[in-house]
Amino acid sequence: MSGMTTQMTPGRLLGLPLLGLLVLTSTGCLDRHPGTATAPDAVAADADAQPSPDGSLEVMPDGGPETVDTDVGPDLGATDIPPFCPVPLITIDEGLEVIPQTRLQLRASLGTGEPIEVLWTVVDAPPNSCARFQPSATALEPRLDVNVVGTYTVQLEVKSATVPWSCEPVEATIVVVPDQPLHIQLTWDTPGDSDECDEGPETGADLDLHFAHPQGANGDDLDGDGTSDPWFEDLYDLYWFNVNPTWGSFIPGADDNPVLTRDDTSGSGPEVIQYAAPEAGLTYRVAVHTWNDHGYGPSTATLKVYVEGVEQFSASRDLAGTNVLWNVLSFEWPDPIFTFVDGLVDDYPNPLFPQ
Ligand SMILES: [Ca+2]
Ligand SMILES: [Ca+2]
Ligand SMILES: [Ca+2]
Ligand SMILES: [Ca+2]
Image 1 (cartoon, rainbow, N blue to C red):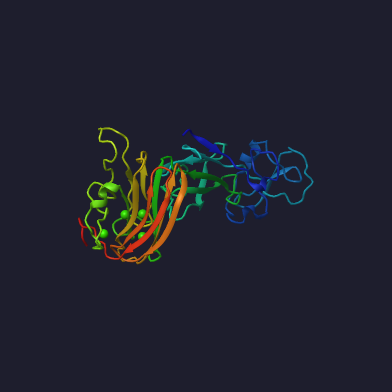
Image 2: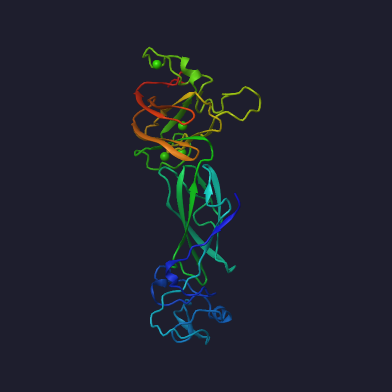
């Protein structure tokens, strides 16, 4: 998508025209960062400024308030003018509607060219999204990975020599929508993990998403219930050990295979399967396996299925321990009608990697 800039107007502007300089007063504008200041010379050099009630500019250098006569602008006749704040800009190269697993490139500016400090905050995001600014929330141009489907709102606060932190922050809202015919997403909560978003070996409970083609229905009867199982079947169970199987056409280069586009071993997820060309008339099955809780205790797994970008199925289930299989659902393609199986098998080890 093309680059896009969003600009929001803070509520504190009170309908005043945007001017090039701000007036610092003794109102709440300075309370949070009392050291904020600008030199009187810099103020006097910019005549396009918001006047104080007596037609002067008020600034706050280190030694306390000073007044620089400028004789510009009308006398507003007010005795308590709120601080005047320019509007920061949030620029997002990828636009405001993107597909899952997009790495957003954000940029902050004030439009004046003056050096600024920034503070970014994710104020709203889908559950378990773990969206964090990289390399940090104080970078001028941070990156943000948006992996979970849903709506994200980011907030930007800006400080400069003439702008205090207390000016109203601006926000931008990004919508993450799948673009594939079939998009399956697994996320999980693990209350026993104090940081569900850290990454690295055994830093969280490791759950796995499984997606089975009907050809796999003749697999081994791993749970011993007398019927064959598709799970962990070599070719027809798509999961972390079989991330891009050849289903559908066997023509080399045919772009009709499902893909596990995101594996997660460190907690929270998401694990994601995308399928550009599900086959008409086939019934697919979806399961969740607790590969290893790594000692963090029970997790609540949430499985969502999106068809053409629209959520069509959602279910959650508490899963405790290692080697638990949650047989979630089956559905036929196209025009899927979802059958919520909701079966639970407590001891279902991976036959290739028993533990
Ligand atoms: Ca963790
Ligand atoms: Ca996993
Ligand atoms: Ca069985
Ligand atoms: Ca993770």
